[in-house]
Image (cartoon, rainbow, N blue to C red; front, side, top):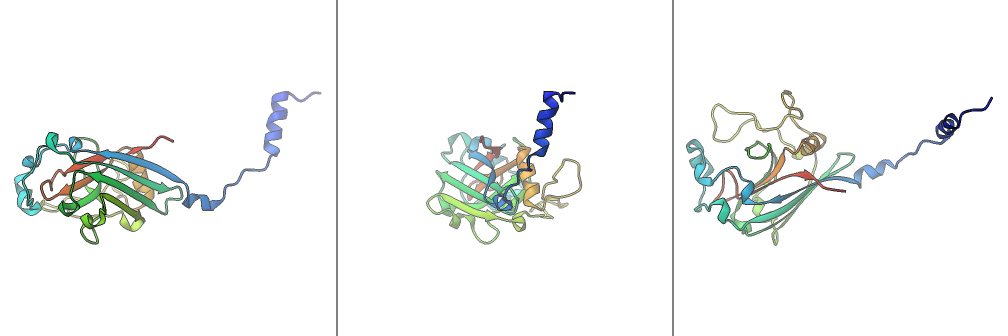
Length: 210
């Protein structure tokens, strides 16, 4: 009795040894997301800042309408495939480093403000880290923050992001952060002395084409 050709091929494949990858590759290969930052992505003008927040945010320079700003930027967020590290690279133009007050990754869809999930100014002014308009930083789980209060608002609101909508669990790891990035709900936001609430410019993060 002859064995059918398809069955013979299947048996031959099962006999092959399983292909194994070097575990070290998990730290040296990446899942990457990028954003092009512009004022046009900010969902509102600085003049529309809610009154209860105007004093606490403390803008110290006159604002400029979004359509008239020359600030632009590009940023990349790369996760190692073992999710032990992530790397941020950003380049900006049209903004003086000394005017930068805050720089964050927020969690939120387009056209909406979302809470801060990574604060790049936690250990000093982020403006000092923009040497010649370039910023780089290595992230670990410790940089993914669970912030209990949203400054200036009472009653206080939670300021972190659930991994899944409607779930009570908050994102505390890089793997959770990458999952949010894959859903298209992470964005860079750069805040300056003139644009403290909505921000100077914003860039939604999307998966890069391989």
